[in-house]
Amino acid sequence: MLMQGLHAARRERAQQKTAALSAEAALITSRANVRYLTGLISSNAAVLLPADGPGVLATDSRYAEAAQRDCPDLELVIDRYIEPTLVRLAAARGLRRVAFEAQDLTVQRHQELAAIDGGPELVAAGRLVEELRAMKDETEVGLIARACAITCEALAFVLPAIRPGQTERDLAIALERAMIDHGAEALAFDTIVASGPNGAIPHHTPGLRPLATGDLITIDCGARYGGYHADMTRTVALGEPAAWQREIYQIVAAAQQAGVEAAIAGTDVSTVEAAARDLIADAGHADHFGHGVGHGVGLEVHEDPTIGYGKTGKLAAGVPITVEPGIYLPGKGGVRIEDTLVVRAHRAPGILTTTTKELLVL
Image (cartoon, rainbow, N blue to C red):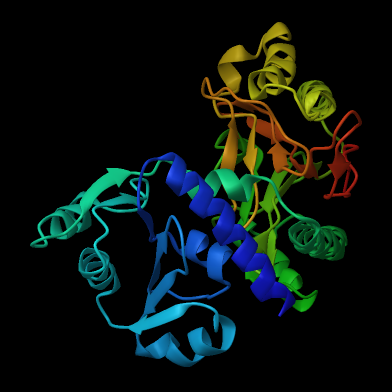
């Protein structure tokens, strides 16, 4: 009953935002957003959420019993073709203007819905539910914290076993197995292990390259727990690092710390971005850091807000984000350090990924 009340409160907030769009209802099709509003875990579900009154959950027969069990306070429609069914239902109930999730609905699916005879006008809802999802309640923060703890425990388990000759793929598999063994329901994303020159590729796919003495090894990993994701990156040295390796590590560590310290409620995301990026640029590596400084984390591993790419907007208390600057030197290697943390008001953020950020020499 507690979770039902939580989901009902979320739907009420979404209804308020729907009404502000001058829409009579919202059609929610994103899997993560459906789960956020209803609690249902399904690969085929959507919600028709009127601006006022109870919502309608549509799913197919595979999830009918789960929907009846988990969402008893919602009207339930069982049909394979959920989106057209809900749009026709909206028309039958006299709803003339329905907001839809343009970031989720493909052009083809939108065309099919717009072509329904007598159907409502479809208007883009913007990131209506994602904006609500950005600020987490304490239950959500607790789930993310547990996912982060599992991630840290798993990495601590495999670090002592890293050795020359082990392949990137072997290390990635061992780490993924350790996350499951330590309580993860699944992986948050495919683990990245990038060794030696492969460390210059931010999202390198672990391959058959053997780890070698003198390598920097970037490990980007995360567990999923209760539907919520962790995201952490650490870079370690296999054997005594060279001077250039220590230098870029120290720069990235300082930039990462600057970004973390800037992540206080009320701060614009552009300020957090600049805190980390400017330090790297001032050290002469502006051209060696091409991705964003961070992103939100929750039911998806990449959520609002985005920290980088010219994005603006102020951080709010209770928003989990990552801070993950890096330096990538083509042909030589790279360093990335990333934490998942929770933005707090008027004080330092709460770091959820607690593995040391000192350069570990294995």
